[in-house]
Length: 434
Length: 196
Ligand code: FES
Ligand SMILES: [Fe+2]
Image 1 (cartoon, protein in one colour):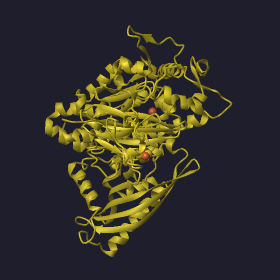
Image 2 (spheres, rainbow over the protein chains, first blue to last red):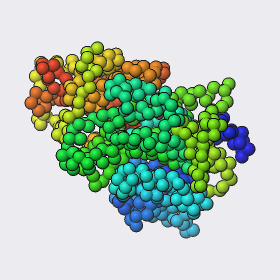
Image 3 (spheres, rainbow over the protein chains, first blue to last red):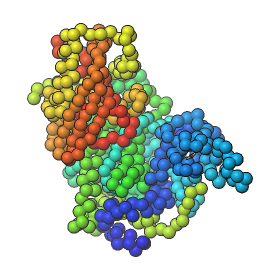
Image 4 (tube, rainbow over the protein chains, first blue to last red):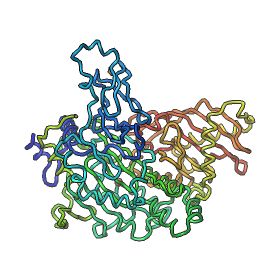
């Protein structure tokens, strides 16, 4: 299998079957969505002891719980009796126990099997403890972001070792959003299906080449109605001579920085006007004064960072996009919105109306292209997906920490994550559930 | 194409008082008689005509005329939660004022909105419409809907109910609020870049 992956992922190109093959998809569930750190939930979604959210870790259904000691567990949502779904709610609180609806087996939110109805019928040697809910053995949090892995080696080294310099970029994102990670909370989600392999979505996460073309409808409409100098118009024209850049942060993580253009002057002034903008500007300026209000306006505008934590967590503006494979040709793309505690209410209203902008004006066109790519990948006559942009132009620079910086339209994002993908797919690590 | 549709609406009106009104409306959908009072036959005919016209214009992609069905102080709202949460607290699937509705139409009209290439054909079916008197001359209505959406040769069904707040402006009825409650609001959505 190892050499197969050398054939499939080559320098500057990837074989189409990497996206369309069922066997590869199946192996990804273990190697990628099991044996590296996978994002599952944000701490603000389970703040209270005995709260939980139901999530997916690849194809696995899991319950992310916080027990009464505040410890987080990731439990497989599969009854150890006959397989029924133990928890059928998406979220909840005051839930120290989960009872399987089928035969009433009851589990603590730590996974421990607490009660089996009429247990005596199983005989004397029967041990309840061998029927605890299975759990993902390594769960870790970095400043509110909860990730888990099956991989003992990665698990023991910890999440910071995995994130490396991406951690510093997460810190910058938190700084944009007020600086206090405990004050950042998830405020709902927009959830979509995309009829494409999950990697068609992930490919785009660091694609600085496409906006000028894919997002023409947004650019043209904005230009027509609001004039030049708005929103993403710095992507139109010679983008590689702008100060924007893209980076390979190691371990498959990548970064695309729009801030040098977006925040060159006020990013809020560039923003296509949000619903209620004038009312909020007036109200906030009156409430907190012009300078402080200005600060809040910039904070309500997207962070200007595309930070991609391989394989499934994307920071886009002030939102988190989480990609979950549902089948080889179907993916869940969920945009979690974020709000900030301890700011005036109008700031969060402005943030929400801002976060609804791109999913209405940009993402639909992206999605249409992801789906079109996936369709094209089924054409048998052409085998290769090209990822060679700026591979041979000598623009990349590597710093002392091993971070490679390239120009904004480079395919460095795809090359970086595919290197990690290949490494994972080739590994023979043995991991299992705790 | 009326020039009014191209001029950019402002959004001073969408203040806290307007949001409060949205949440009060949302509560009022749950009320039964006698807490609600009936409307006159004349108003009923006019409002029904507006509701059907708006749906037909959206289906026929006569989007400039469709925009005219809306008050300049309107909200078009598709909650992403079930039951509905205050849009100041949680993200919605869509929340547009008049200006953003105009933006949406202008985007589709560029001809390069690839989520609408080929164009998504829709047909609304509205039924079970109930009318009630709102505050002052406002009329409120709620209707069940089914939308058949055709994209790339494939049919898709959306359904749910819509709450309308309708107001008379210079003797013309307009939509002030359209709250579209999908039965799967909190589930995965497909490409819904047409008007619901
Ligand atoms: S399957 Fe869960 S108790 Fe039987
Ligand atoms: Fe895009």
